[in-house]
Length: 416
Image (tube, rainbow, N blue to C red):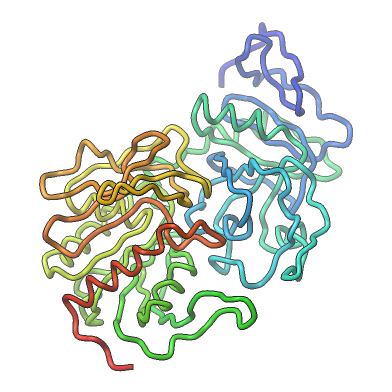
């Protein structure tokens, strides 16, 4: 850790400790402000003091930001956030409470959360709980009352940092010690976090999407059988498959091609998930290549998109800050249409590495990065974003129908 004793430290707006010249201060952070019982300390020594919420303790991970104005419960339960501390740029998090329906997995995998404003009382007809109590019950450490604009600008300008989040009511917080924890954390590159969030045993799924009144539905007349490879699958993806008349068998991400084929699927879905795709690809790529050789219909989302790309010979890289939000514009190169999409990824497929025969189908209008691909002459395609997004946007729901149509052309419908 580098000493900065000769730098003049000044407290900045929002309870941040930083250097007068714009650099970080680690050796001389400001004293813990009165009334503060929590802090975020970045790996460069920057300290954000605030008020804790949720669980008491320490959470260490990569600090990212999400620009969505709705869907915070889905975001907090998205398994793709494993290893990450989520900064919400929208200030009013918790205003609609929590409920039992808007969850993407049973146990949240995110490390922690950061909010601009204190968590207020919920006001929504679907609410059956308070976000603060929900965070505590799910062992999620949270920080409120900091300048999230300043933190977001820091991530935008200098990349996603490692950080340590501490909530310690009634205790003095040693910012130097907390910062050392952040500095020692290895970061997401090289991490196979999919193993932490994937299912351990196969299971079946037949719940369909939510509608007002009845809530979630039930698949009654399946027409196709889909094997979903779980690298950290969101429940709403499985619901969308079931809503398109697919009986879904979910297998762990470590399944082999032989294990997949034993279930005689009409198509295979490659799910979203967290971590470095190159690490997960060590066991996922051989399985996918085995399925490609059988010309089974394949559809990938997010990490599944990256797994398909690696299996086809492309490469991936870690992004500067990633894409996380529900307002991400993507251009469909096949139709010329622009889709507003929901995204959550910190790695991307290098579009320059796509081999001959692999067609780039979608690109980001934010930074021109790859957002979709298809294998020419074969029923295999994938997108980087989330067409299943709940509460939305829903511009890309057509991709599920495209997957179904590929199975229609190659499979014999299952008898329900």
